[in-house]
Length: 345
Image 1 (cartoon, one colour):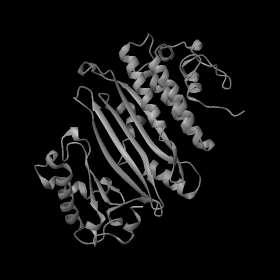
Image 2 (spheres, one colour; image 1 turned 90 degrees about the vertical axis):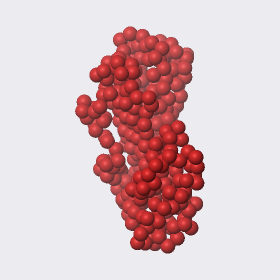
Image 3 (cartoon, one colour; image 1 turned 120 degrees about the vertical axis):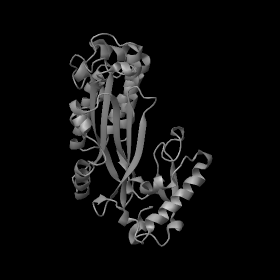
Image 4 (cartoon, rainbow, N blue to C red; image 1 turned 60 degrees about the vertical axis):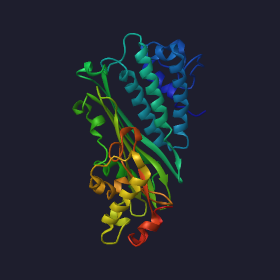
């Protein structure tokens, strides 16, 4: 009988009395045997139905995330889950240390949200476009030196980056690119060196594979930060387009070849923004978008055209979100590089 490495087992290993790995008793609540709950963390899961349900869902998400992985990848995901369990034990406390007394209502709400977020993260581990993708997830929790700002006592940090499960040349090259070629995109220091990180804000940098076709692997990077005491958090959405045949990220030269393409694209983007946003457009200085629209980190590709990504506040109010505009391929006729036609697969 194969060893079943479930979230319940990791949970039990880290916060409960030891449980035999092949004999986890059925639980009346949660994903583990509540009769073995010893810590305030474990008891919180058992005593609060909503959190208990979130734990059960998380356990299923973890088992699903392991499906079809090699032993090496499975070990990496299991290790990340173990680190998350330790993170979860301190992320909803007052001092980033394990709780020594029962959680209050705010603590239970925090844990429930935390379990839901982890379930969402694990759902990114899947087969896409013929590649088995899994994620390297790292976490940190720091005590806020001045929680009087808004009552937030802990600053949480997350970095999540994809890996291809495999030992073939493409998997090795892609994984090396993620590990060493995305430093300008993702600040891993917030989890690798948490003592030096800003303990007055929450940060989440999640890079997710969102599209795979024969020519490219599209990754969407969502960076979120919430400065404690602010009215709301801020986020940014950018893209990394990885060219599979070249083993590197896409550059502007891969898409455009004609002289003056920048000015043409800038003009088209402005007109598209006016059409798409209408009365919501807030652009006092139209030239403020010029550098944005010629940045490949703002580009995604559809069958209809080149998709340009804007961030909150750049062309519209925060409530509008992160707008996109699409420049039709027909409007870019005569500007494109020879192989650009392969991109909108």
